[in-house]
Length: 298
Image (cartoon, rainbow, N blue to C red; front, side, top):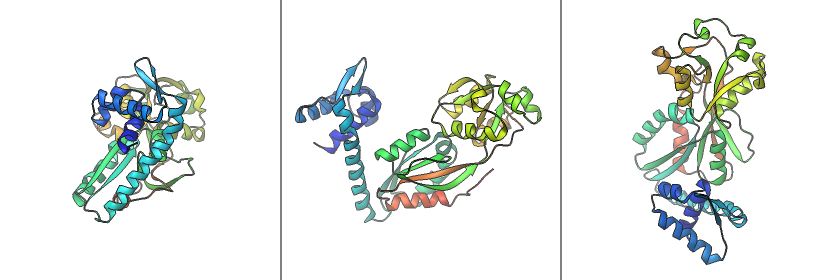
């Protein structure tokens, strides 16, 4: 059994699709299929069942997956430990961040870090809060960034920044005229939301009871998978939405959306690491670069 076989197995398991895994791994579909078949043959066990155009883990595959992920994480930690002997002349940082943080908070940090440490390679993946947590727990990322609190005892959480979200409406909407919103206004409105698991969605829902609004009473007419999709839907008149001011800064300046008169509680941006995994010098250096940014911007 080789690390490459494990890497291919985990990629196929994560996507439940051989062709998609091959594209991510930059391998041919035939090479990925052959690797999985060789692993199954070597150990006399079937790891995947073919389901339609995709694949699904068998019971053996489900049991083997966390072991494979743990081995890959240990191998990555070993490489990081050796890289540390070279200081910060080389290395790699694998990061997974929520959409808002990845798109609007981290780019300046990434640019500065690249100038300071040109030999360190940074890999940034984007996912909602739940996906970030899973990557950290499975060893697919060394450092994560999410909005809001987490309930994961195996993860260490550190506040690094923050913001105050806002509610946005289409041009010409009554909410853009500056009047304070009432709970009744919010219950009558048509809302555009991010998907379940999104930090933006969870933070807004958590803030509603303090405003006298039952989250279940909102009329959610659209659920979309990205901040930009939600913003575009609001611009098109589909409804109102709660988003980060960073997401809507340009659209607000151009008059494409209007900010409603509603004060929401601040939400925090948190850096997250696994408590039991090795943190390389490169990870520590990147985290220090993040800490150097202003903490709170409401």
